[in-house]
Image 1 (cartoon, one colour):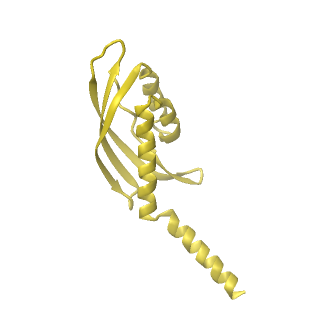
Image 2 (cartoon, rainbow, N blue to C red):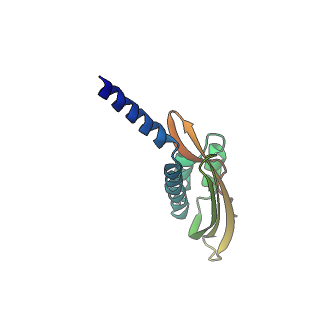
Image 3 (cartoon, rainbow, N blue to C red):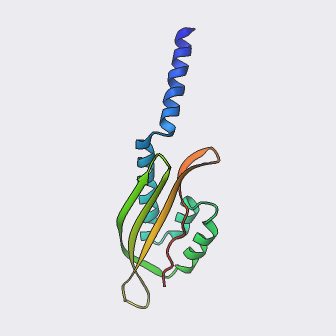
Length: 136
């Protein structure tokens, strides 16, 4: 019986440690940020909004995704990333190069992404709380 209790305590401790482990939080952020930016790069902005946008910004995100239907992203660069695993916040500054056909003029826009690590429906995930940039 004592071995069972010890085993249960160890499993609970491991589970709790995994929930707020700064390394895991940072890894999850890296994965989420890369996937979101990849979606922007390959003109899958609507899917990025559905997957990563916080409820408060989701409608604006989807509206901007609809407005960006004719936009082709040529390249993007992450300029800086600030991550605070303790607070569960992150800021990503990036530049996006794009064009809108029939024009071949390459334009650039800066995007400042604010992220929060939060629980929703029992699931801890990184969610973006700012809409994507407007492509004009």
